Amino acid sequence: MNITPEDSYNTILMLSKTQKPIHQRLSRFFIVTSIETFLTILFIMAIPKSAKNAWLLGFSKTRYLMVLPVVLLTLILVWLTIRFWKDVAWADRFSQRFQTALENNKLQGLADFSVLTILSGAYLLIKWGFFLDRGFDYQTAVMRITPYLLLVTLYSVQIALTIYPRFTKENAENHLSFPEKARQEILRHKQLPIVLILFSAGFTLAHIAGWELRSHKEWINTVMFFIDEFNMDNEYVLQSYFSGLLLLTAGFLLCIIAAYKKKVKASFVLQWTLLGIIFLYMAVDEVIQIHEHWQVPLSNLITSKGYFSIDWVRSAVILVAIFGLLYIRFFFKLPRKSMLLFGLSGTVYLMGVLGLEMLAGEYVSTYHQWGYDYGMLVAREETLEMIGISLFIFALLDYIRQQLPEAPEDSPIKLESSVQQ
Image (cartoon, rainbow, N blue to C red; front, side, top):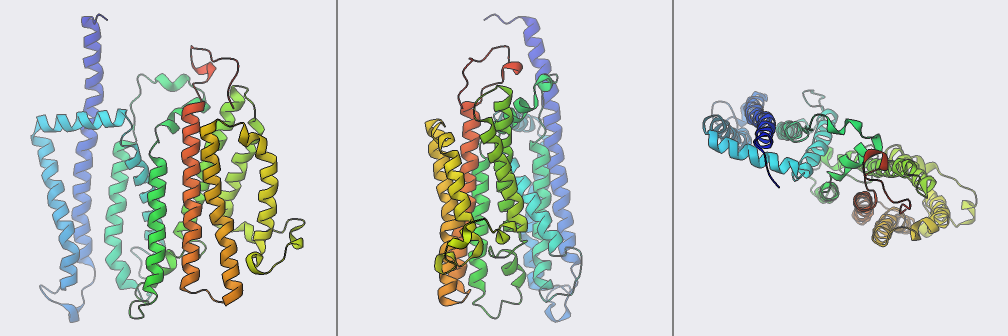
C-alpha cells in the first residue's frame, strides 16, 4: 500500500489534534489531585483539638499519624506534576501510552471502578453527615474516616473525567442509530463484570467484619455506624442499592438487545423485552422491598413452616416455576455458550435468592434467633445474588459482542437474511 505525502500530513495532523488534549487532560489531573490532597491535609488538621490528647503543638499522635500518608501522597503528586511540566520527552511518552490505552479500552475498567466509587463515597459522606455535627456517639470515628473517604471520592472523580471523554473522528458516529451507539458503548466495558465482582467481594468482607466487631463490646458503640451500614440484612443500605444497580444494569442490557432484535426483525423480541422489564422491576424491588408483600394465587397451598416460613418465598417459588415454563424454548434456542452462561448465572442467583433464603427461614424458625450464624447465612445469600447477577451481566456482554453484529441500516455491508436469536 502506497502512502502519499498528503496521507502522512493528515496522520500527523490528526495525532497533533488528539495528543494536545490528552496532554492537557493528564496535566490537569496531576494539578487538581495535588491541590485536593493538600486541602485534605488542611482539613485533617482543622478537626477540633482535644487538650487531653495533646502531644505536639496541641495535636495528638493520632492526628499526625492520620496526616502522614496524605503528606507523602502530596509530595509524590507535586513531584509528578513538576516532572510532567519540565520533562517534555517523559510527558509525551506518558501521554502517548495513555492515548493507546484509551483507544484499546484498557482503562475502561478503572473508569467504571471510579464511577462506582464516586457513587458509594458520595452516598456514605452524605449519610454519615459529612461536614455536619449531628451529635452522635461515633462522631470521632466518622471524623477520622471521612477525610480519606472524601479524598478517594475526589480522586475517582478526576480519574473518571480523565478517562471517560473520547475523541471521535469528525463525529463519525452521528449517523448511527441508538441501538448501534449503545452496542458500541457497551462493547467498551469488557472489564465491568470484574469490577462488579470486586465490589461484591468488598461488601461481603465488610458485612463479615461488622459481625466480627459485634463481639468486641469496647468497640461496638464506636463502629456501630459501620456495622449497621454494611449489614446485608438491613434495608436502605449501600449494599442493597448496589444490588439494585446490578439488576438495573442487567435490565438495561436486556432492553438494548430487545431494541436491536426489533430493529433487525429477529425472533424472540417479546421474550427479550419482557426479560428486560422483569429485571428493571427487580432493580426497583431490591431497593424498596416490594417482594416482601407478595401473595400470588396458590401460594397458600404451600406450608408456611420450616423452609417456607418466610412468606414471600412461597410466592417466589411459584413465579420462578411459571417463568421457567414460559422461557424454556427461548433458553434452548440460545447459542450454546450463552445458554451455558445464562444457566450458570441463573443457578447461582437462585441458590442465593431462594436456596439460602429458605435455609435462613429454617434456621430462624428452628432457633428463633438472628445471631452470628444467621449473619453468615445472609452473607452467603447476598454474595451469591451479587455474583449471579455479575455473571449474568458478563453473559449479556458476551452475547452482545458475539451475536449482535452492526445493524444493517448502520453499515454499508448488509447482513444475511437469517439472524441468530
